[in-house]
Image (cartoon, rainbow, N blue to C red; front, side, top):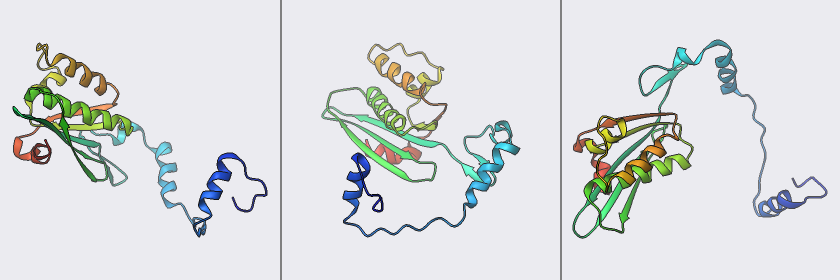
Length: 186
């Protein structure tokens, strides 16, 4: 950028902003990973390497979906939502939210789920594994139970609409002991 005689607009602003740093450019010697990327489309079909399990392997590398653990809690004085998001690389992000309105435990559970789904949607997630310790919410979303509660219907609708934005979603009920991180955050 510094070698160009006239810099305008965005490139000029970036060039000016980067002048305070000493930058050295080293070209990449070889692209070994590109060989695998070029090989796969020509030699494998999608059905050959996607299994029935949540995680699958491509050339010995396990591909995992994003994971969302959620939990909500409500008492007479406060309500909270806790979520733990785990990236495909295993990086965990724990978030805790204070719900500033009175609600039931099931509403708090739905709030936690909706908040987590909105975050993952904004991140561009396609495959998702959702785990929680509330059977009611998970069975509503899987279609096993009908949502007949008027107080939960808006939450159910919001969560269902958000789930439609993902390509593949797995819902898993886990015991409270296995959902302790999200439970503590809530």
